[in-house]
Length: 111
Image 1 (cartoon, rainbow, N blue to C red):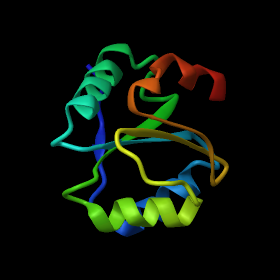
Image 2: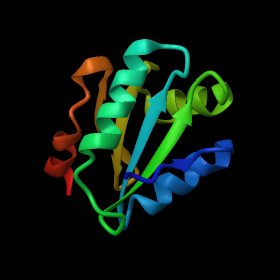
Image 3: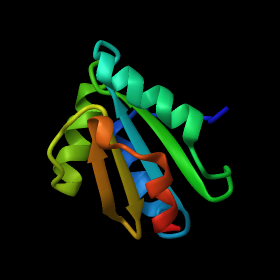
Image 4: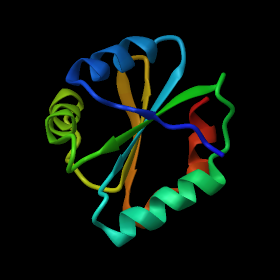
């Protein structure tokens, strides 16, 4: 099973940006009240293609952590959506997708 790290502080986003200089960083934004988000989250859990040493994977519940979600959108100029997958490399979002267009295998293109 995939291990998601929870995002708890706005400062976590700045650390992810720094860490992305050395290791791929992924953020999965999830709405705990949305059935489409639940489907995308389950798909991510079942089909996540990487090992822990290849990338860090973060979980961001957008309702419960609205300030962090807003900061993500502001920092990287990415329109907020949920569910949404962001791939961060070298301090920049190199890929983002939302809703049922999230395809875990697409992550492999960014290693």
